[in-house]
Length: 344
Image (cartoon, one colour):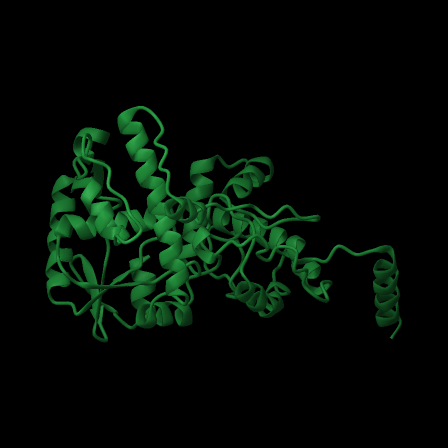
C-alpha cells in the first residue's frame, strides 16, 4: 500500500521504514499496532458541542498492542522501531496525511496512533477507496472531496462505538435521552440496496462466489482481493455495501471500454449498450459507508493465477450488475439490431 501511494506522488527513494521524495515521506504501521482500551468507571460524557476526536481520547487509553503475548511471536521490537520512525517523520512534517484503509476501522487505527503519540499536527484525510494515481494525488493534496459529509459520518460512527463500549463495560445498554445524539447516531446506519437484477459484489458475496466457483476460503479470498486493490485494479473490498455513488457510476461508463478487452468476459461487456443505474446509491448512503466492488479501468498485467481467477470473477459480476434488465420489447430490438449488424 505504502509503495503504491509513494509511486503515485513520486516519493520513490526507499529508506528504512519509509519512502521519501517530492517533499513527501510515506510510512506505514505494522498492522494496528496501537490499541484503545475503554476507561472502565470513567463518567460517560457526551454532548453535541464536543470535538469527536477529543471525546474519543477522553474515554480511552492507548498503548502498543502486545503481539508477542497475543500471537506467540516476537513483533514488539519491530513495532517500537517503526513507531520511532513515524514519530521522527511527524516531527518534521507540516501536514500528516491519514491514508489508512477507507473504513471506520481505518479511522480508529489512525486515531489510536495519533493519541498514542500525542503530537499536535495538522491532519488531512486521504480517502482511497480506489487506488489510481490521479485519485491518490488529489486525496493527498486536498483531502476528502466532501469533508463535511465525512465528519458527519465519522461523528455518528464514533457515537455508536462509544455507546457499545460503555454498554459492554457496564454490562447493560445505555439509553441516552437526547434528540441531538439520536440524530447523530442514526447517521451511521446503512441500508443495502434491494434491487431487481444482479448486484455488485461486496467482500461477503465475493467470498461466497469464490467458495462456490473457485474453492477459496475466506482468508485467501480476503488477501487476494486486497492485493488486487493495492494494484489499483478494483475498488476497496468493503464487507457489506453493494451500491455505488454517482461519480463511480460515471467512471464505470469509461471503464467498461477496458472490460471489453477482458479475455474471458470481454464479449459480455461488448453487448452492454448502456449501463443500468440500479446499483447507484438510493437510500442516503455515502462513500464513507463504503461501496460495492468495481473495476477501475486499468488493464491487469502480471497477475498470479489466483489473482487472475478472482479478478475475472469480479469482472463477471461487474458486467452482470451493470447490464440492464430488458423488457420483451428491448430484447426483440436488441436481437434485431444484432442480426442487422451480422448481415451488414
